[in-house]
Length: 306
Image (tube, rainbow, N blue to C red; front, side, top):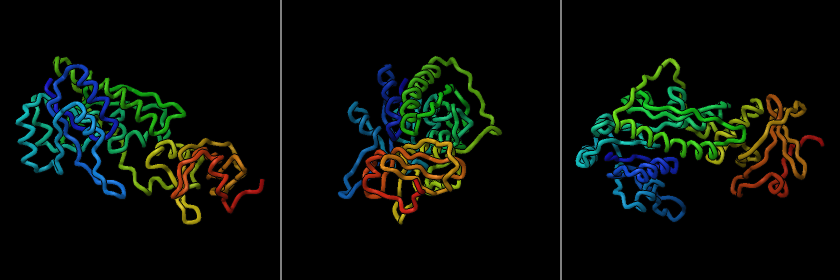
């Protein structure tokens, strides 16, 4: 198959890699424009661009997609069979209809559940024990297209965003390859999504990351899991942002919400129901630490009596 691959972050790379390894012709990679980062405003590439350059694959980086006549003509000139989209931007109809067999997307949920930008985060934040991966044919409404293949993915109690993301990235690559082969062989039947079963997975904002200790320890623990290691759940203390990367639930009702129990080796915070033991933490301007190291140089002023 002659394929144009579209993606941006690390999540996309296993899917691109498996297509190359299985002798599909990658005509080009499309990714987001380079960005200037850090104090020196050094130009950095997306993970997918870096990988594509190492494989000597041509790279396109359009600033915009909708109404971009030049980009549309560039894609048409490649005469692709298929666009494969993994963690990229929303494609307008004038783009996704270019290939002979159209375009499909790999989505990190069992659609129609968790339509939107952050499906992996929200499945953890909501405390789900199972999620999934879906490949679907692109349509005008985001994440609504007819489904090629789906696979369920178990969530283990120790999973956070990083571990689940990385596992789903590898499982997703296999699903992408199977989907390409189905399309190539013409041996598939598209399944329509049931919009009545849809749920949202909106972009993660700073407001979502802020911990409310009036909520239960279970809710807060799941928020920590869903946002670790980036962007991380946080609370404010003495005008400083404190990020939590790892926690566990303590069946303890002796502490009030936002009341701290601190020893030399342990930090427990009261919640609306039960308490939260903090295991990995970071103070604004400092490095991420295990709790024992952190507590050697930090004291919470309103500590409960030991």
